[in-house]
Length: 220
Ligand code: B1M
Image 1: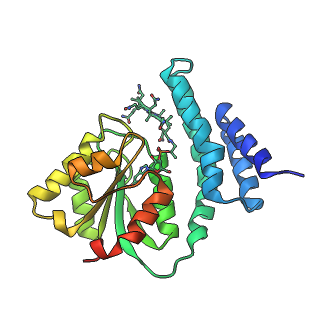
Image 2: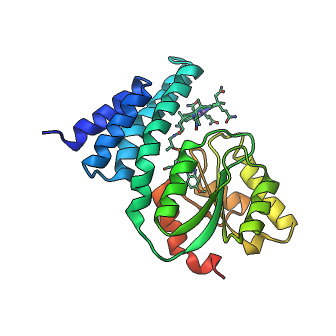
């Protein structure tokens, strides 16, 4: 009998082997077996991808291999996305979010997962993509009537652009109008406090929990 651990092992192997077809097949298996898509994503794909990042750091693998590992994960995530979105089934629209990866940063996997989880839990999400300039976040928030601006950053250099967005909002007298949530691998609660963001979330599940828990602040 195939267990969840067998499926996770196949998912992990697909990332370590840089094999998008195997990633898709394993993700399909995870969905068919009814595994929790959040857990499958974390154990099956995110853990081995982080291992690849560490190997890259130690110069055991090179950038093209890291790109191939990420591409394999993206192929698998695309199949899990529907299951992630179906998970919440919320009928009430809780709020409008504009979300993107900040200027200078091309990492989009975590941001896409956050977008899927928020959508699954009743938020209307406008995903602005990657390398989004501060002015674009604000323009999109105004155009969509957003309550929340979500800023993802994966590099210790680009997290500085999260601060730029908060500062630009302040300079335009718009800071009180939007609830700003920040996240990404190098981002911490201390950083969020330092730059004056309203909230920090460590992962996609926490992002939903934080926004759900603080609704009165951003619907003010
Ligand atoms: Co990059 N990269 N990378 N990379 N990469 C990191 C971030 C790094 C830690 C790897 C390492 O060296 N060990 C390192 C950063 C070091 C630092 O600044 N401290 C690094 C580097 C250096 C670079 C380049 C500069 C390498 C180079 O060119 N020399 C370059 C940067 C290019 C650029 O952006 N300008 C680069 C490029 C790439 C690839 C293109 C190869 C690829 C990205 C492909 C893609 O996204 N399409 C890549 C990858 C895959 C990684 C690692 C290995 C994995 C990132 C990932 O997708 N994780 C990463 C190592 C690591 O993170 N430990 C690394 C899986 C994803 C599900 O998790 O993105 O953390 P994550 O998202 C989570 C949470 O962070 C959180 O929820 C998500 C889901 O649970 N979250 C939020 C994220 N955003 C949020 C927003 C929120 C709330 C929560 O609210 C709004």
